[in-house]
View (cartoon, helix red, strand yellow):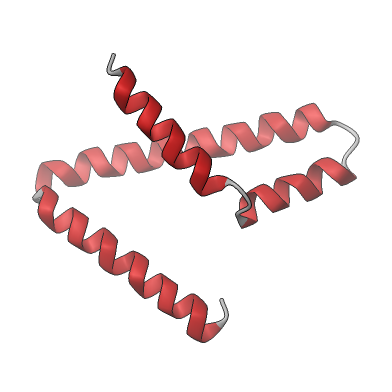
Length: 90
C-alpha cells in the first residue's frame, strides 16, 4: 500500500471539500435532523459511492485514453465549468 498516495489524496480531497456546497448541505441536514449519525452515515456512503465511480471510470478511461489527454480534458472541463459558474450563475 502506498501511504504517500493515500496521504496526498486525503489532503487534496479534505481541503477541496472544506466549505463546499456538499459540506454546507450536510451541515444543514445535521442541524435539522434528529439522527446526526444517520446524516453522517448517509454522507459517508455517498462520498464513498461517488469516489468508487470516479476510480472505476478513471481506471477504465486510462486503459483506452492516454494519460496526457485525460489531464488536458480534465483541465479544460474544470475551466469550462468555472466560466459557466461565473457567467451563468450556476
